[in-house]
Length: 283
Image (cartoon, rainbow, N blue to C red; front, side, top):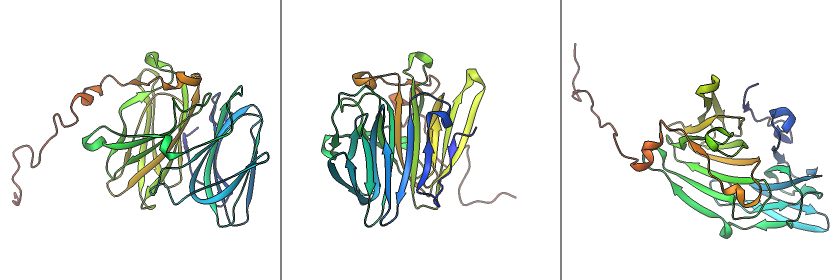
């Protein structure tokens, strides 16, 4: 089965990932688009849930509590994130339209219903050169959850994210985490490429992702690049074996590529190269 899920814009749930459909254990994920007057309901049962606004606004009812969430757009502002503990139902309504993601993982309970505010979230610039990007820790340790981990990433056009390539499937002592990448692109007519691979398993897939698509990371090393005319945003939901503060454990980086962490500008080729002269034509 391909790890690329194309957005189904003719449906209320444009992307749906369940443990059964993905062939994994922990993580579920949905992208929901509500048109004016629409409603959406999800029961969490034994799962914690995180809801992230993408665009528009809506009212989220959790029991007797009603919470207003909204966002001008993913390229405009860092979001609020709603955390819902297991055993609660979530009902979303909208007047003007609302696009959001909702995903969950098995949980025991004990953490309260909560809205995480942008001021609580660590935002960092990573890498350099052709891999200079922003990562927003919208629900990662020390922000409390049981298994869920959420990040947002921004890569300017023509640049890479997830470099050096890394894995978190248990290989190399890494934690076991299942992951999705939900992409929004600027302009929406652009595209990006996502690769999953493991040399020791003869596993390699390259996915061409368009605006609104979702890529699964079922195993292996992975990295993503935006085409030269496209700014790339992605939202990661992860869940797996780590619980609580163990969610802070880092991945395993591909040893062939970690040298760049010491100097992002080392070895960059300058042009013209190989003795070529510009402005001349050879016959």
